[in-house]
Length: 184
Image (cartoon, rainbow, N blue to C red; front, side, top):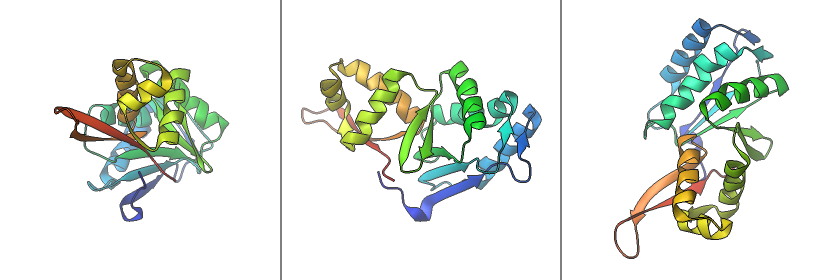
Protein backbone atom coordinates (compact mmCIF):
# COMPACT_ATOMS: atom_id res chain seq x y z
CA UNK A 1 0.00 0.00 0.00
CA UNK A 2 1.42 3.35 -1.01
CA UNK A 3 0.12 6.02 1.41
CA UNK A 4 -1.49 9.13 0.00
CA UNK A 5 0.74 12.10 0.93
CA UNK A 6 -2.39 14.23 1.28
CA UNK A 7 -3.66 12.00 4.09
CA UNK A 8 -0.33 11.37 5.84
CA UNK A 9 -0.11 12.96 9.27
CA UNK A 10 3.14 13.44 11.20
CA UNK A 11 2.92 14.00 14.94
CA UNK A 12 6.06 15.32 16.62
CA UNK A 13 6.41 14.05 20.19
CA UNK A 14 8.55 15.86 22.70
CA UNK A 15 7.90 19.48 22.07
CA UNK A 16 9.05 21.25 24.18
CA UNK A 17 10.47 18.52 26.45
CA UNK A 18 13.34 16.20 25.60
CA UNK A 19 12.73 13.95 28.65
CA UNK A 20 9.15 12.73 28.95
CA UNK A 21 7.87 11.26 32.18
CA UNK A 22 4.72 10.64 34.22
CA UNK A 23 1.41 9.05 33.32
CA UNK A 24 -0.31 12.43 33.49
CA UNK A 25 1.94 13.87 30.78
CA UNK A 26 1.46 10.68 28.76
CA UNK A 27 -2.34 11.17 28.90
CA UNK A 28 -1.99 14.78 27.75
CA UNK A 29 0.19 13.80 24.80
CA UNK A 30 -2.23 10.98 23.92
CA UNK A 31 -5.21 13.37 23.90
CA UNK A 32 -3.25 15.87 21.81
CA UNK A 33 -2.34 13.14 19.30
CA UNK A 34 -5.94 11.94 19.06
CA UNK A 35 -7.19 15.50 18.52
CA UNK A 36 -4.77 16.03 15.61
CA UNK A 37 -5.59 12.93 13.58
CA UNK A 38 -8.17 13.62 10.87
CA UNK A 39 -10.68 10.83 10.18
CA UNK A 40 -9.33 10.29 6.65
CA UNK A 41 -5.66 9.79 7.66
CA UNK A 42 -4.09 6.90 5.75
CA UNK A 43 -0.71 7.02 7.50
CA UNK A 44 0.24 8.34 10.91
CA UNK A 45 3.93 8.93 11.58
CA UNK A 46 4.73 9.44 15.27
CA UNK A 47 8.10 11.22 15.34
CA UNK A 48 10.29 10.92 18.44
CA UNK A 49 13.28 12.84 17.05
CA UNK A 50 12.96 15.53 19.75
CA UNK A 51 12.84 13.00 22.59
CA UNK A 52 16.07 12.18 24.37
CA UNK A 53 14.48 9.73 26.80
CA UNK A 54 11.09 8.77 28.21
CA UNK A 55 9.91 6.68 31.12
CA UNK A 56 7.99 3.44 30.81
CA UNK A 57 5.04 5.03 32.65
CA UNK A 58 4.85 7.88 30.10
CA UNK A 59 5.20 5.43 27.21
CA UNK A 60 2.58 3.10 28.67
CA UNK A 61 0.06 5.90 29.14
CA UNK A 62 0.72 7.47 25.73
CA UNK A 63 1.85 5.02 23.08
CA UNK A 64 0.73 1.71 24.58
CA UNK A 65 -2.78 3.05 25.19
CA UNK A 66 -2.95 4.42 21.66
CA UNK A 67 -1.91 1.10 20.11
CA UNK A 68 -4.24 -0.84 22.44
CA UNK A 69 -7.13 1.31 21.23
CA UNK A 70 -6.12 0.82 17.58
CA UNK A 71 -6.09 -2.94 18.07
CA UNK A 72 -9.79 -2.89 18.99
CA UNK A 73 -11.01 -0.55 16.23
CA UNK A 74 -11.38 -0.68 12.48
CA UNK A 75 -11.28 3.09 12.04
CA UNK A 76 -8.28 5.37 12.44
CA UNK A 77 -5.17 5.49 10.28
CA UNK A 78 -4.59 2.48 8.03
CA UNK A 79 -0.89 2.40 8.99
CA UNK A 80 1.05 3.81 11.93
CA UNK A 81 4.83 4.21 12.10
CA UNK A 82 7.16 5.42 14.81
CA UNK A 83 10.32 7.20 13.71
CA UNK A 84 13.22 9.20 15.12
CA UNK A 85 13.92 6.73 17.92
CA UNK A 86 17.25 6.47 19.68
CA UNK A 87 18.38 3.35 21.56
CA UNK A 88 16.83 4.53 24.84
CA UNK A 89 13.42 5.46 23.44
CA UNK A 90 13.32 2.27 21.35
CA UNK A 91 14.09 0.15 24.42
CA UNK A 92 11.40 1.93 26.44
CA UNK A 93 8.78 1.23 23.76
CA UNK A 94 9.81 -2.43 23.57
CA UNK A 95 9.51 -2.80 27.36
CA UNK A 96 6.06 -1.17 27.44
CA UNK A 97 4.79 -3.14 24.44
CA UNK A 98 6.15 -6.59 25.36
CA UNK A 99 4.15 -6.52 28.59
CA UNK A 100 0.92 -6.21 26.58
CA UNK A 101 2.00 -8.25 23.55
CA UNK A 102 1.71 -5.22 21.27
CA UNK A 103 3.77 -4.37 18.21
CA UNK A 104 4.86 -1.02 16.79
CA UNK A 105 6.34 -0.51 13.35
CA UNK A 106 9.53 1.59 13.25
CA UNK A 107 10.81 3.30 10.15
CA UNK A 108 14.60 3.05 9.98
CA UNK A 109 15.74 4.83 6.83
CA UNK A 110 14.12 2.91 3.98
CA UNK A 111 13.30 -0.11 6.12
CA UNK A 112 10.38 -0.99 8.39
CA UNK A 113 11.09 -2.97 11.56
CA UNK A 114 8.48 -4.40 13.94
CA UNK A 115 9.30 -3.48 17.55
CA UNK A 116 8.45 -5.86 20.40
CA UNK A 117 7.48 -8.55 17.89
CA UNK A 118 8.36 -12.20 18.28
CA UNK A 119 10.66 -13.76 15.70
CA UNK A 120 7.62 -15.49 14.20
CA UNK A 121 5.78 -12.19 13.67
CA UNK A 122 8.93 -10.46 12.42
CA UNK A 123 9.43 -13.23 9.85
CA UNK A 124 5.78 -13.00 8.81
CA UNK A 125 6.11 -9.23 8.37
CA UNK A 126 9.27 -9.64 6.26
CA UNK A 127 7.44 -12.09 4.01
CA UNK A 128 4.45 -9.72 3.79
CA UNK A 129 6.72 -6.91 2.60
CA UNK A 130 8.26 -9.18 -0.01
CA UNK A 131 4.82 -10.29 -1.26
CA UNK A 132 3.29 -6.79 -1.36
CA UNK A 133 -0.40 -7.75 -1.69
CA UNK A 134 -1.38 -11.29 -0.73
CA UNK A 135 -3.84 -13.60 1.04
CA UNK A 136 -3.44 -15.60 4.23
CA UNK A 137 -3.34 -18.74 2.09
CA UNK A 138 -0.28 -17.42 0.25
CA UNK A 139 1.47 -16.73 3.57
CA UNK A 140 0.54 -20.20 4.86
CA UNK A 141 1.95 -21.85 1.74
CA UNK A 142 5.17 -19.82 1.70
CA UNK A 143 5.83 -20.37 5.42
CA UNK A 144 4.68 -23.99 5.56
CA UNK A 145 2.07 -23.29 8.25
CA UNK A 146 -1.69 -23.78 8.49
CA UNK A 147 -4.09 -21.15 7.15
CA UNK A 148 -5.52 -20.48 10.65
CA UNK A 149 -1.98 -19.93 11.96
CA UNK A 150 -1.27 -17.49 9.10
CA UNK A 151 -4.57 -15.71 9.81
CA UNK A 152 -3.66 -15.31 13.49
CA UNK A 153 -0.27 -13.83 12.64
CA UNK A 154 -1.72 -11.44 10.06
CA UNK A 155 -4.47 -10.39 12.48
CA UNK A 156 -1.81 -9.26 14.98
CA UNK A 157 0.05 -7.29 12.31
CA UNK A 158 -3.19 -5.63 11.14
CA UNK A 159 -4.05 -4.70 14.75
CA UNK A 160 -0.64 -2.99 15.00
CA UNK A 161 -1.37 -1.13 11.74
CA UNK A 162 1.67 -2.78 10.17
CA UNK A 163 -0.50 -4.29 7.41
CA UNK A 164 -3.73 -3.22 5.72
CA UNK A 165 -6.57 -5.73 5.33
CA UNK A 166 -9.27 -5.51 2.66
CA UNK A 167 -12.32 -7.71 2.35
CA UNK A 168 -13.03 -9.44 -0.94
CA UNK A 169 -14.99 -12.38 -2.30
CA UNK A 170 -13.35 -15.79 -2.51
CA UNK A 171 -13.40 -17.72 -5.79
CA UNK A 172 -15.67 -20.37 -4.25
CA UNK A 173 -17.90 -17.82 -2.54
CA UNK A 174 -17.72 -16.52 0.97
CA UNK A 175 -15.35 -13.84 2.18
CA UNK A 176 -11.64 -13.64 1.74
CA UNK A 177 -9.26 -10.96 2.90
CA UNK A 178 -6.31 -9.59 1.02
CA UNK A 179 -3.47 -7.93 2.86
CA UNK A 180 -0.93 -5.37 1.79
CA UNK A 181 2.24 -4.03 3.31
CA UNK A 182 3.16 -0.36 3.44
CA UNK A 183 5.40 0.81 0.61
CA UNK A 184 7.88 3.56 1.40
